Every structure is written in C-alpha cells, then in structure tokens.
Image 1 (cartoon, rainbow, N blue to C red):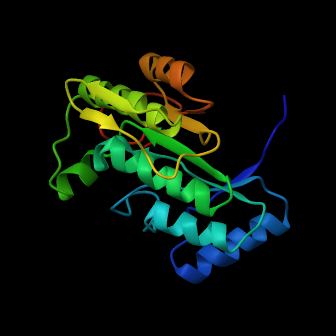
Image 2 (cartoon, rainbow, N blue to C red; image 1 turned 90 degrees about the horizontal axis):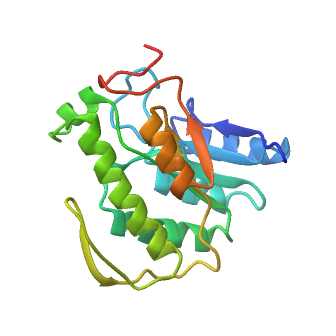
Image 3 (tube, rainbow, N blue to C red; image 1 turned 135 degrees about the vertical axis):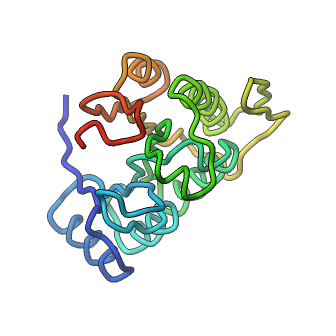
Length: 201
C-alpha cells in the first residue's frame, strides 16, 4: 500500500496564501492540497470557498492533487456537486478528489438559516447523495427517487474519463459503512458528530 502525504489549507485566508501554499506543497512533493467547507470561523478560522479556490490552486500547479475535506452535503444538491466535481476534474487534468460528509456544525447551520436535522436524517441524505453523485460521475444516465432527492434521466458534463476518487468523512459505525460502500478513501474522525460540535471540542 502506498502512503501519501497532503496539506490541509486551514491557514489559507487569501488568494495569495492559497497560491503560495499550493505551489510550495507541490515543490515539496506533497500529494494533495485539501480545503474544508465552512461558512463561519469556528475553530478553523475563516475559509475560502473550496471548489473555487481549488480550481485556482489546480491552475497554479501541474502535479498537485486538490480535494475537499469535506463538502457538507446539506449545503449543495448532489446534481450540482457532481457537475462542479466533473468540471474541476476536467480543468485540473484529472487531479481532483471529492470529499463529502453529512455536515455537523450546528452553529453554522443555524446562522445560515438551514435546519439542523438529527444525525440519522443527515446521514440518510448523504447516502442518497452518494448514490446520485457516484452514478453521475461514472457517466451514467441517472434516475433516482428517494426521500430527500429526486433526479430524472440526468447526466453530467463533462463526463470524467474515470470517476474522481471519492472520500467520505466518517466517524460513526454507519458513516464508516457508507465509506466502505461508496468511497475510495475514508476520512476517519475520532468520533461521531451528533451534537453539532467537533468530536475534539
């Protein structure tokens, strides 16, 4: 098994920080640069929007892989996640890795006016999202009718030559099961985020 080392851009606050971090990571032969997906500083500090920022990081490098660690599923419809992932994979020359999670930061949901549903419901939504996203990124014409999402004969453009590697951020037994079924990579947390706070806080 090969080991890779990556950089999480937690201290990246500006465009200049982003580009210098990406170039330095590539210069030092790190495999990946990943960004978090948060609307409020909380314990991480202010964050750039990950998909836009990663596009710029990919354009500023030639070998460095870029990825999300992780997108909060409740903030975007899976059809749009798949579209953006396919586009970023194309413009990066196949260097994108898509990380998805169920969402956990209660204060962020509340401040954005989003309902913070029980963990079971958030994970149910994520599972439906994973089914849609993987089908679309595999180039399939996708029809899905679930409790939370519906798509009807949808395809994605551009179709990736191969599905970007998928990471699922997981802490609970059920989330680890989802990672095992759908993901290429499991981002293992110290414990489940049921309370809306970090498991380490």
